[in-house]
Length: 416
Image (tube, rainbow, N blue to C red; front, side, top):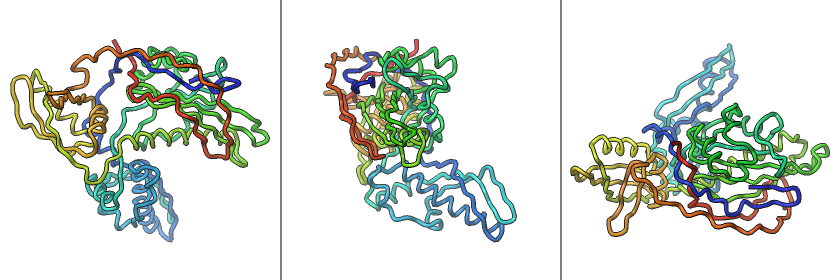
């Protein structure tokens, strides 16, 4: 996507006409990580160290559940569950651990990690009539580009937009975001011009370096006078790869009394939150939507079937699977899952499983890469859009019109 000096050129017609990106399979216990909340800070002062410790652990339970709900629930349902106290939360916690513990006579500091019990948490959400998402996306590499077309930079000290993204706390969400280090390998893989031009080879190279499937290109242009507190950050963002999404143009106003760094941090947080929300909306599971399908699994040897079963354990939407028939060339499995068919297909793909509905045959499940994909049609060229006017800014992002429905955009090329 290009942001130009006189106008915003929306990122139209950019579909990367190449085949899928090969990445390592995530561990089978990836689903349990969704219900693990790490790095919960506590700092309590009380009359004694023991009292401070007890209060801190109680506060940690409340904070951890809040973080978990923020991860699972869509934005408009975050405030709906009744807040639970520490004693009530105990029923939902499998265990917790303590790190970086420090104490004095009256003070207690630590970082806590909680493992929540998935089924009781799901029942809590069901009892409150809340939809939630728990499918973990494969990692996404963020390419923060700063400046207008012709002057845009990606690497180096001249990119404060990259610095704002690098300063964000890692992890804790359904879509893991990776900000490249900017080392020699990164510089060789891609630069600002190639990223903005959507060069599939370059984007695939940087994705492979970080075991990612998609790339998030986010271009920021600083406008106005920061010294007068009147700066505006104009940000164009698009997710490209297997699960590409529409390009969005947002405007962010410099916060009152804040610096340019504050503005950049605010915008980076907002863009990251929007990406997480889009993924949640695509993967929301309705309470009581459990169903079962029968799938055929072509297998040449028993090890393939064992690997399919192993990967199914990591699929968030799957509640159970059972082999119902087995022959020399294929197996038949009954899979119990929550959600819609397309959500199951998406969830399967995050564990490198290809689920396809073949007309007249039924559902077929394969290990990803087991069958070569057909040729992908090239994207039709799109007309140059009319210049877009800057929307008024009030500190809340103003979202521009999306440029294209890229939900079926092809992926980056696989490593040879």
